[in-house]
Length: 100
Image (cartoon, rainbow, N blue to C red; front, side, top):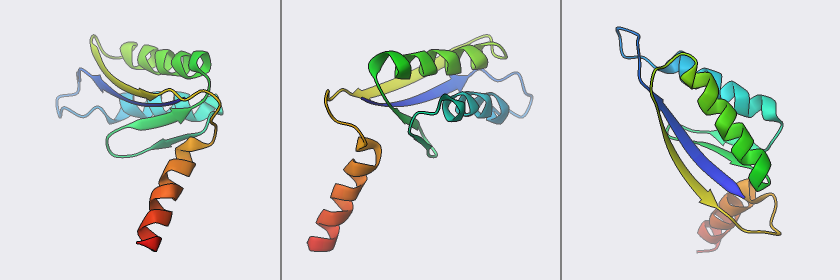
Protein backbone atom coordinates (compact mmCIF):
# COMPACT_ATOMS: atom_id res chain seq x y z
CA UNK A 1 0.00 0.00 0.00
CA UNK A 2 0.96 3.62 -0.43
CA UNK A 3 -0.07 6.13 2.20
CA UNK A 4 0.09 9.87 1.68
CA UNK A 5 -0.11 11.73 4.95
CA UNK A 6 0.25 15.22 6.29
CA UNK A 7 0.59 16.29 9.90
CA UNK A 8 -0.49 19.70 11.14
CA UNK A 9 0.85 20.50 14.59
CA UNK A 10 -0.58 23.37 16.57
CA UNK A 11 2.37 25.72 16.77
CA UNK A 12 3.62 27.23 19.99
CA UNK A 13 6.25 29.17 18.06
CA UNK A 14 5.32 32.90 17.95
CA UNK A 15 6.16 32.95 14.22
CA UNK A 16 3.67 30.16 13.52
CA UNK A 17 6.42 27.90 12.18
CA UNK A 18 5.91 24.15 12.38
CA UNK A 19 9.15 23.24 10.61
CA UNK A 20 10.88 21.53 13.54
CA UNK A 21 7.85 19.39 14.43
CA UNK A 22 7.30 18.35 10.82
CA UNK A 23 11.01 17.61 10.41
CA UNK A 24 10.81 15.27 13.40
CA UNK A 25 7.94 13.39 11.73
CA UNK A 26 9.80 13.14 8.42
CA UNK A 27 12.85 11.85 10.31
CA UNK A 28 10.71 8.98 11.65
CA UNK A 29 9.67 8.10 8.09
CA UNK A 30 13.23 8.24 6.77
CA UNK A 31 14.54 6.08 9.60
CA UNK A 32 11.81 3.47 8.98
CA UNK A 33 13.66 2.07 5.96
CA UNK A 34 10.44 1.98 3.93
CA UNK A 35 10.28 3.56 0.46
CA UNK A 36 9.14 7.16 0.86
CA UNK A 37 9.18 10.65 -0.55
CA UNK A 38 8.32 14.04 0.88
CA UNK A 39 6.92 16.93 -1.13
CA UNK A 40 5.50 20.33 -0.23
CA UNK A 41 2.15 18.92 0.87
CA UNK A 42 2.51 15.26 1.90
CA UNK A 43 4.87 12.50 2.84
CA UNK A 44 4.28 9.28 0.89
CA UNK A 45 5.33 5.94 2.28
CA UNK A 46 5.00 2.43 0.83
CA UNK A 47 4.85 -0.94 2.57
CA UNK A 48 2.55 -3.42 4.23
CA UNK A 49 -0.46 -2.15 6.18
CA UNK A 50 0.92 -2.76 9.69
CA UNK A 51 4.37 -1.37 9.02
CA UNK A 52 3.11 1.77 7.26
CA UNK A 53 0.51 2.52 9.93
CA UNK A 54 3.09 1.97 12.67
CA UNK A 55 5.32 4.61 11.05
CA UNK A 56 2.41 7.05 10.70
CA UNK A 57 1.53 6.54 14.37
CA UNK A 58 5.14 7.07 15.44
CA UNK A 59 5.30 10.26 13.34
CA UNK A 60 2.12 11.53 15.01
CA UNK A 61 3.55 10.64 18.42
CA UNK A 62 6.76 12.66 17.91
CA UNK A 63 4.75 15.69 16.80
CA UNK A 64 2.31 15.26 19.71
CA UNK A 65 5.28 15.34 22.07
CA UNK A 66 5.81 19.02 21.17
CA UNK A 67 2.31 20.07 20.19
CA UNK A 68 -0.87 19.99 22.27
CA UNK A 69 -2.92 19.19 19.17
CA UNK A 70 -2.11 17.40 15.89
CA UNK A 71 -4.18 17.20 12.71
CA UNK A 72 -3.66 14.20 10.43
CA UNK A 73 -4.74 13.91 6.79
CA UNK A 74 -4.24 10.43 5.37
CA UNK A 75 -4.97 8.93 1.97
CA UNK A 76 -4.22 5.30 1.15
CA UNK A 77 -3.93 3.28 -2.06
CA UNK A 78 -4.44 -0.32 -0.98
CA UNK A 79 -3.49 -2.72 -3.78
CA UNK A 80 -2.39 -6.15 -2.52
CA UNK A 81 0.32 -7.87 -4.53
CA UNK A 82 1.85 -4.68 -5.93
CA UNK A 83 5.16 -3.26 -4.74
CA UNK A 84 7.33 -0.45 -6.04
CA UNK A 85 4.30 1.63 -6.94
CA UNK A 86 5.67 4.76 -5.32
CA UNK A 87 7.84 5.21 -8.41
CA UNK A 88 6.04 2.96 -10.92
CA UNK A 89 2.90 5.11 -10.93
CA UNK A 90 4.93 8.19 -11.84
CA UNK A 91 6.92 6.26 -14.46
CA UNK A 92 3.67 5.17 -16.18
CA UNK A 93 2.49 8.79 -16.39
CA UNK A 94 5.86 9.94 -17.73
CA UNK A 95 5.75 7.18 -20.37
CA UNK A 96 2.26 8.23 -21.44
CA UNK A 97 3.41 11.84 -21.72
CA UNK A 98 6.39 10.83 -23.91
CA UNK A 99 4.13 8.79 -26.18
CA UNK A 100 1.41 11.21 -26.50
